Amino acid sequence: MNLPRRFPGETAIVCGTGPSITPQTIETVNAARKYGIARVFCSNRAHEIFDCDVMHACNYQFWDHFWPELEGKPFDMWTTRPELEGKYPGLNYIEERWEDGLSRDPSYICAHHGTGPQLVNIAYLYGCTTLLLVGWDMRFHGKVDRRTYKQRRYLGEDPLTKNHWPMTGPNGELSGLIKEMETIHPADYGIRIINCTPGSAMTHFEMMDLTDAIASS
Image (tube, rainbow, N blue to C red; front, side, top):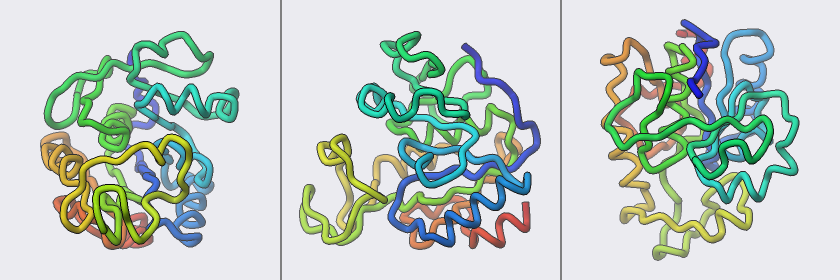
């Protein structure tokens, strides 16, 4: 199945699940969608707090666990897990391939080891030309050791995240995922990617306050 070019030339707010998200973030994002300023793309459980147009989760365990809550939701849903193709009505399958950058071909996206980078590719293939990133902390704060952090890692833990312990750098940064994102050069695709996440460990895209970024888009 190909990704549809539904939103050509529009702005996308691509929502992660980092703990930097505040009530003001949620209010700003939802207002931007309500008034037609931006489309909202949600990774994993971000759809629980943001009004959503498109959501994506790459892990089959996520869909098996959360499908009873997601069935019938009024937004597009995607996964890259071939074993889920046709399993849940309304869940769409898109192929992933291990390539740098972004796929220009709507029949597949680049894998990049994570839902977030894949969702950026989805927003691009939906036709969006300005992508604003929120909740992309790209670090776990207060690292003590690989499985001990003094601060929460996500907006909310669940049975899946409690068993997910990716390798992090000395300050808790998600180094591997950041390196994957560094293969994406927005100018090569005629788009802007603006990281609107305060304190994000990922600094190679433009950095801007969310409200300012919305105004400039």
